[in-house]
Image (cartoon, rainbow, N blue to C red):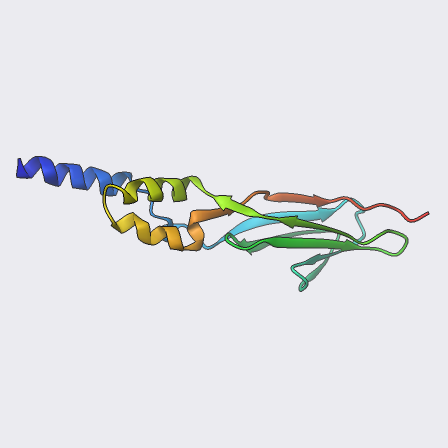
Length: 123
């Protein structure tokens, strides 16, 4: 009986995808529909037309594009629970350890990883 319990606990631990081991950032590519426009990420770093960068998984990401002759354009990308987070939540009902991962950024993922901000030309 004791051996069965140990095997069951070991299987639960092995099956749980702890979000604590998932990186807190993920790679995102953003671009403007006008290639030579200025692209700004979260009101900070400015790029020319296209950028690849690391974004925190559990924060809304804001991407804005600017160019003379075009209206300023902005796009916000939200986040949702990842598959690792779902496994952690479900595993927390069996053993308590995976519940720790639910409070970490690895539980979440951005809804878009390839962002294009569409710009409209002024008349």
